[in-house]
Image (tube, rainbow, N blue to C red; front, top):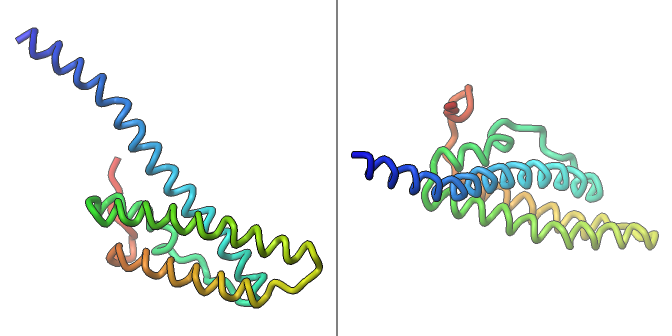
Length: 138
């Protein structure tokens, strides 16, 4: 019996870094998603569009994806990273155009449309929840 306890303790210790990476990855996805919403609002302003009002469904997407798990969570996390990879150079280009004194509105409208399209596709991965938001547990 003591042998099993030692083996369990060893396996648990080995699994701890994996748990930490998963938790860190989930936190990183949430932070990236929140930053994307802020960047999207800035791009909308450059495009002369009105950014969407903060919506609980948009705000809670990373938590909803974690609750769903499986392929939807994996796909959603990769799609969030991909969207961030698209927005970085897009925003840098908009800022460069603005710094040269040119109007970035047309390019910002295209980037805003791409952002909205990607965001809507991500929201389609997570089904809508009731008015209380996604299920949370401690």
